[in-house]
Amino acid sequence: MFYIGIDIGGMSIKGGLVNEKGEILFKHTLVTEPKKPSEEIVRDIASVVERVIEGSGVKRDEIAGVGVGCPGSVHDEAGIVRYCCNINLVGTPLRDMLASITGIGAVKISNDANCAALAETMFGAGEGAKNTVMVTLGTGVGTGIVVEGKLLVGNKSAGAEGGHITINFSGPECGCKKRGHFEAYASATALMGQTRAACEKHPESLLAEIAKDDGISGKTVFIAAKRGDKVAKAVINRYIKYVGIGLVNFANIFFPEVIIIGGGISNEGDAVIKPLRRYVQKNVYGAQYNPEIKVVAATLKNDAGIIGAAALLM
Ligand code: BGC
Image (cartoon, protein in one colour):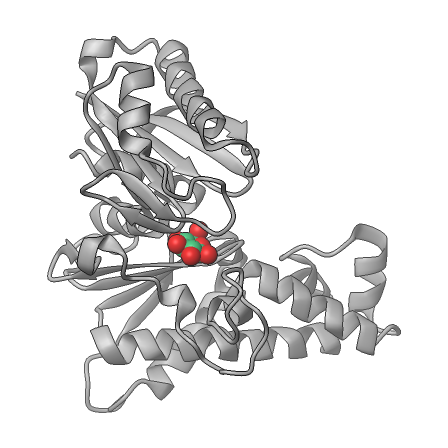
């Protein structure tokens, strides 16, 4: 059998045909229009499902079902997106709408980071581990927590929102409008803000020069640091501490065997992973007495969301 996995993001709706080994055989992507009426967004999602079926040539009776990962509070059992701060899907009965448009009865939905955690734990960086914490550092910060082989989601699957733990009550505003959340310090969006502030403070720096020529993305500060810029290195060091604080908080509660870092920032590899690993291993409670926690980059990269959504049906 085959599975269709859909990963809804603020920028794109990604879909793929996935086999039982978690391999993607065909992919299709559509630009998200997050402010559209919810019915139209659901129709866009359904069109990605159709494109995957047509493009891959799979027969409809070979499809076990469609899984969807969506940012925000998703009520998995009821199939409803309860809350989502950047895509107009609040209160949308996504599962049933999608099933009725596509005619595919088996549809399951869950939070996007929960899907990524499932994928990495089944097929990626956390394979073989029973306790994992996945942290996606992208436009927002998502977390997926696996305890004794099972996703921990809380009452009506509203929990495991690690991006919204408060690390400074008077800190910067988060995407959800509250202050000082982990996401407001550790997301790629937050890093871009930290980069912008450093450029304004140090207009003479190489970082500011690069930003002026190419604009600011989540990569800018790493490019400047690789070329030896001290201002960029200081921004990264501070950013690592912000992310590290959140990881240590998760580690002290769940004490996983492995913390998996995903999202766009994880593409920086060792420049991010090695210092984060050092930070966690040094600062976790009882560091020298307790088992060592691995901190690794996600191996399924951008595909984790699609694979994990498909895995909801496996
Ligand atoms: C949302 C999470 C989501 C994460 C990654 C956060 O802003 O609150 O639900 O998992 O972004 O998309």
